[in-house]
Image 1 (tube, rainbow over the protein chains, first blue to last red):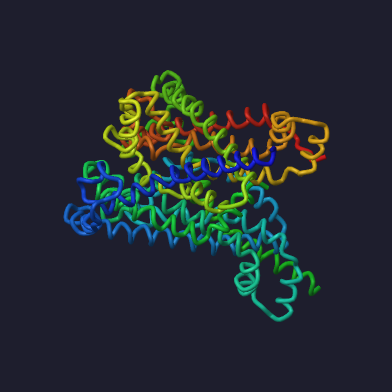
Image 2: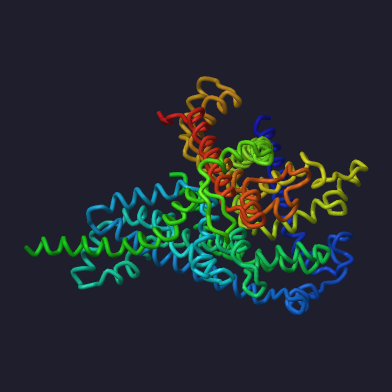
Amino acid sequence: MKGKKISISIVILYIVLFVLSIIWIYPYLWMTLASIKPSNEIFTKLIPSRLTLEHYRYIFSTAKRMNRPFLRALGNSIFISVTVTFSVIFTSAIIGYSLAKIKFKGSNTIFNFILFQMLFPGFLFIVPLYVLIRFLGLLNTLTAVIIPSLMSAWGIFMFTQSYKSVPNEYIEAAKMDGASDFWIIFRIMVPLVKSTASIVGLFTFIGIWDNFMWPLIVIKKYDKMPLSVLLASFNHEYGSYVGPLMAGAVIQTMPMVLIFLIFRKYFLQGISMSLK
Amino acid sequence: MAIRTLKRREIIKGWSITSTYLIYTAIFWGYPFIWIVILALSKWNFLTPRKFVGLRNFIKLFNDELFWRVVLNTFNFMIYYIPMVLTFALLFAIALTKIKYFKSFFVLSFLVANVSSGVAYSVVFQRLFAVNGPLNRLTYALFGKTIPWFNEPQLALFAIAMMVAWKFIGYYGLIFYSGLESIPKSLYEAADLDGAGKFMKFWKITLPLLNPSMIMVLVLSISLSFGIFTEPYMITGGGPMKRTYTFQMMIYETSFRKLQPGYASVVAIMAALISFGCIILVRKLMEREVNYV
């Protein structure tokens, strides 16, 4: 009697979770369908009568003639995000190693300073950083978006923490064989903390790809804009072009979702790790 | 002797590696850090020479109606957002502990919202909540009414809170889930022996032992509430009646539209201070030592 009652409530739970999951995916579904529906069906039919790529053609070629170069913006976004992600992983891997495995006076102070830095919210630095970028003559360049994110206190912190759990014997053994520090870091240490490296890479990529306020401030020229800013400006001026807008939104979202799906294991680890 | 030179080499190596970071952070963190203080004490428009005005920016801020509007808006947002996100994230986490199958499907469909791009999902939700959008079609079909989501002040704030909650419930839910998983099952079994009911177990075991996750989610949600920019910028432009105007929008517009970087710096400093204040208050009031006996 009791067993049956429980199984019914479990079934209800499954149904509720399924319905909620569909609701949660619905915005993605609607966006994707709207980008391949004929314009007049976007708000009237969920399932389109025919599929079309006209909105993608519009966003990539017609919009360019309207001085909204989306292909260029996609290129800018990829360039910015890839550069920053590699730089953050590379520098964090090396600096984290020096803080965790090289004994020198002051390393603890520097580590504590990095923790201290992480307390301050990024928005505190936006106005003075703009003053600096302007002073350096970098406004309207991709460098302006890239350079403030090249190294990350959080990345160094993550690498330092996970290196600490790697036994020193690995390093000693490699040194006996005459391995250089560089070799030790990238051939021994980084593969051992692969999940940390993936988490740092994943979160850095997502953060910089989705960065909006900063590039909005430092870039005013359409051909230098990353996708997020160009899409926002297109939404502002051509808000009634829903189809092309949704095509743009799909292009903006796709890399993040793909990378998330590929690295989802590490994303989940990242969440439980940040708890400790 | 050899050991000493080895040691020295380590010290030199350590400092030369970390100094690259120290130099970088001196330029892109330290320099702005000093500048925000200078700017806060200055009147400037990026072009003409800077004028030192002492604390006048702060005095002006405390008399600025818009600033108090933004403070109220932020708390108003938190009143909608935090209970909503806490309840649903907790329910989601509890549901996950009860099921065996399709777990990764549910987790993925809730988490994929978290990797949506701010600009893209604002563009999408703007259409979903539009007067002729799918949501209003549904409410019209069910209740014969449409809801003017972004035209009424409280509704607009509520709609933005819902969007942000959509994005974060999965993420916070998993934080709760790993908190729930770390509670020893033996505690529940002991409570069963004492004849405790479900509700009792939740109040006396689950909630108190979930305290670290709870604090973490609260801290994340508070700092998020002070950092909102993309959603109101894209959808409402801060309106209606400035009710969705946020700290970040105020910083952006004061600095880069009205060209008052000094005044904007004061807004940024106050936003940081108020959010720190809220976080410290929450920790003081709610943080408990957790011991798994």
